[in-house]
Length: 118
Image (cartoon, rainbow, N blue to C red; front, top):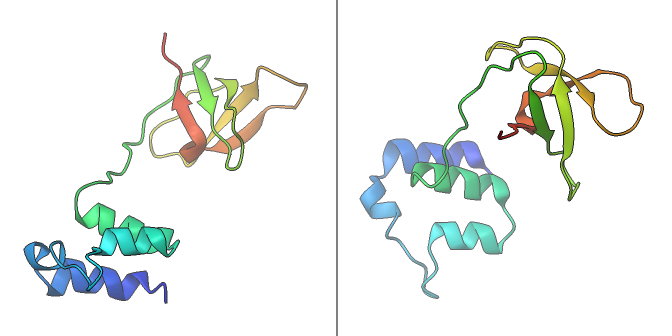
């Protein structure tokens, strides 16, 4: 059962971190290992975040003509793109033009973007 709401309530509100983080089953596996083995990425995220292993990425602003990498789910290679308008951190998507192909400019969810160095 992948009940992350109940899991979060127990490990964040009810049981002290020192207790649940050191718990192991009879096979010597902790909650993080069990969630990973069972393929429960949602439970893994809750446990890892509670342990301080995961941090939410800060929302960045993007400037017009800035180069970015776009990392689409399921794709191995990121795509390069250029930001077409200034975008504040509060905006959920960014207007981009890809460097490859002839696709028209499109709005892409900011969670897929990384700023290019340089």
